Image: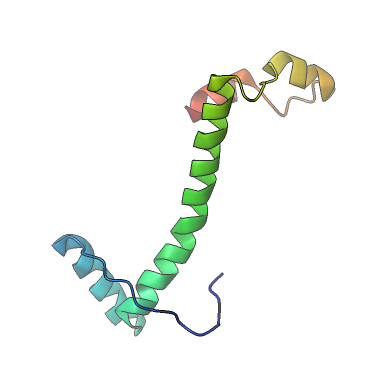
Length: 94
């Protein structure tokens, strides 16, 4: 998860009072620094953000016609209709 290498230059971030208090409480409870808590939170969240941005970029490519999408029925047929992709499940994701 977190890299164990040397730390780089600090970054200053303004936080709402409520979020700052949550960070401070968590740091106190866990006996860690606020920086440690924030680094861990960023490390956990940044992967998800990168994934979300990749999905958004891919969607934009499909909408613009730069990438061709495969219809769900065709994909299921190609996979042997193993039921891994179900339109009902995909609707629930949205």
